[in-house]
Image (cartoon, rainbow, N blue to C red):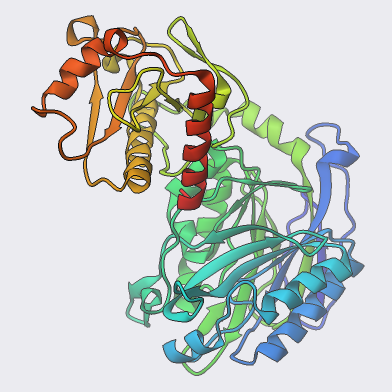
Length: 475
């Protein structure tokens, strides 16, 4: 096993598989650093097969070497649990995240007192009776140094390709993940979780950066032909355009007769400089790298790309973003909306329970910024607002068992707008709500006159119900 150690300022490539290179860390020159901004992480390289026991022994060796190098966080590649020879074997060897393989990883994290990034575990998709189905998730799992599962990201983009060299259909066995996971707070910084083929989709990384990512991860089992052509270029591009550290542990070599991985596990700094490249010769390698978060600010300040983005022309929005636990009251024109009545808050809008309802489940969604007309919103606000309205509609129809909804906005006082702040009404609809369907708009106009305002307790209790429903939807 070859062990490498690099600093942010070093650029090294493996040339001799029999050598052991230890390059001492040196001080960074951009800004003064403090102990709180620095951490040692390890990227790893391995060759998994369908022998799960041998794969786990490889992981144990990698962690032992990483610990010798004082790494507090170790990044393992995609398929660190196994690489099956065919679809049936992949399904057979897969486990739920409560299975014995995950328990072993958790024990290793605890025993070594280190965080683990498991770059792509074959997670069984279970049915309502907890039985395996004919699909799995490709799951990127974070485990803390206490052995606890912290976050699970399920791969969004599935590798279905045909090239002159090979054909691969990941979707035959893998189910695509339901959402992009916001960056995860960890002792080494805010990490954006991705997997392998995800690196070809710049939108995902840009959204993660917008949400605060400092480190992007691309654990991979990258195919040899595409790795030779694109691996380094893509990783450096993701680092440069997002001004983030990029960590990409990798699989290497022949896993079976049909499948070969490129290797070259790599770390890149926010300026696009390769900090470590583990080559394509040896099965087991570890490179420990110093991550110094204080180097991010000067790079981002000198070239403030994200301040230059044209939110008025295009936007970075993701379905499922936001929090169900708002921390502050919000302003709705001249009104103050109590945070306990807000059940969802996204980057540009918030959803809250209504004072006077036209029908049961009638809620409001308003923009954070107080503007009176839709045409005053920028592209980012428009995208986020409509995404949120659709999400709330889906949640309400699930709770009230309806198959229809009235979604409306009164854009300006001549259209019946009584509160001069852009907002949508979302109302689950049932047969017979009104004698004539269009009466809903009449009721909206005179709801304040006809309805007794609900108590704060009533609205808070309803908001709590909606928060729980949104959490259950995992969106």
